[in-house]
Every structure is written in structure tokens, then in C-alpha cells.
Image 1 (tube, rainbow, N blue to C red):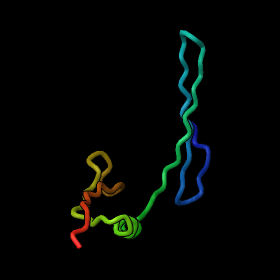
Image 2 (cartoon, rainbow, N blue to C red):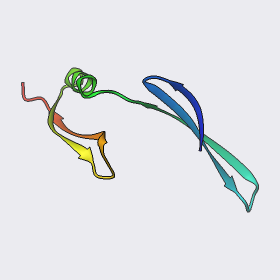
Image 3 (cartoon, helix red, strand yellow):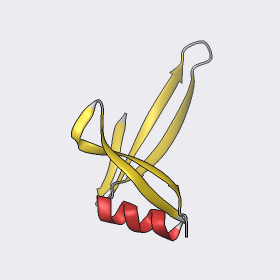
Image 4 (tube, rainbow, N blue to C red):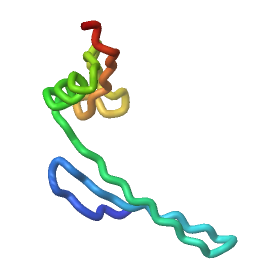
Length: 74
């Protein structure tokens, strides 16, 4: 994996998959957007959802949110 760009709140990276049988290389570019809880809540609200629960990610406590949301009831 190669880190290709950091421009907060965006982080971009590239995975390269090498297939030995055919010598084919496939690249996969991805960008993650890191948002705080207020930004998540606002974005979900605009999309018609409400946050039911916020939990720590089991493998990254205090470093990542697991947000459980459902359609707004109003």
C-alpha cells in the first residue's frame, strides 16, 4: 500500500495487486474522508437518518467511530 496524498480531511492511497501467473498488475486507488462526530451527525441528518448509537471500533478503541443510524422518524 502506498500513501499518495494527505489533504485533511482526505487521505488517499494506492494498493497494487501483482498476479504472478500472468505478470498482471492492477492498481486500486482509494480516498478516505475523516469526519468528526458532529460532521457525521449533520451529514446523516441531511440524508434523512438519525444516530441511534455511537460505539468504539472494537479493534481501534477511542480512535474510530462505529455509528448505528436509522431513518428519521419525523
